[in-house]
Length: 311
Image 1 (cartoon, rainbow, N blue to C red):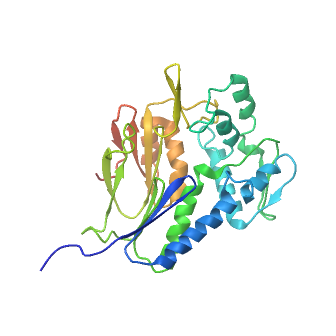
Image 2 (cartoon, rainbow, N blue to C red):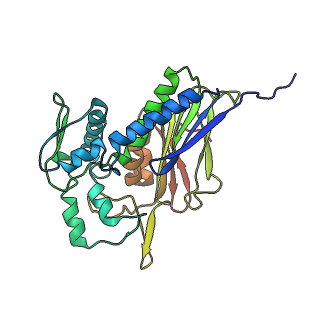
Image 3 (cartoon, rainbow, N blue to C red):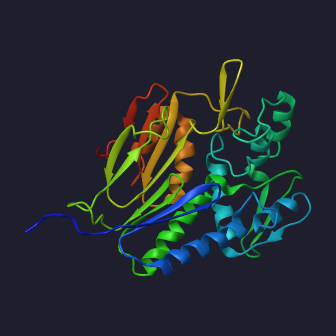
């Protein structure tokens, strides 16, 4: 008898949100793939900060004018983002959009802004200036020029929703990859122990071989790093992870952080929080959390892992 694994995998890919969305399933089911695609199309109309007709942008247009009532799913994600922004004031911030648009790192027109402009934008990214009404499901940004941008949390939320959708349609295992945000579910049918093997990319060579590989049960693996979007002025490298306290890119020993935890939305928040903490304090934070593991890669390509991870 042969011991060969006969399970087939079916990979579907489509471009959305400026990245490649990939579904890996172990059962051919075109209908459920189309359901996922339709869900993401709807999500773009609701959550996008890059299209003027989205419901999120309706809130931004009414900044300093009036509260806006929104559907429950958008309200709940905004509330979670705002609560996290108030908890982690030195790092995570869903209002940082005006600052991002000032720098435009990774986009046409990227530049080193005038310090006075940075100081002015810092006044527009204060999470206490968001007024939330749970009963009315309204969101009010009480200063003109404020903007909500859920880019730091939305892909995690989408990954969680897609996993639920796939499982509710009878899928037992699979991989949801939203441009580096990886959500695993079920037992891996291609390994004897059911564990998944996930590569952690090399920040120095982001398109090449992974720097290391971790073994994990079905969890979410989300990475934040400085290797993708940056520019150089007078020999200094300005990357896209901006501090909500200073308005400038955070400067510490890290090149990337990968968080491993069951919920992808939480993983998105914690990658930012742990990146700002730096390798030593970040490891301490993770080692005091339940069901959270992390891989830190320093700018010297040194790998640091939390206690519960297996290579």
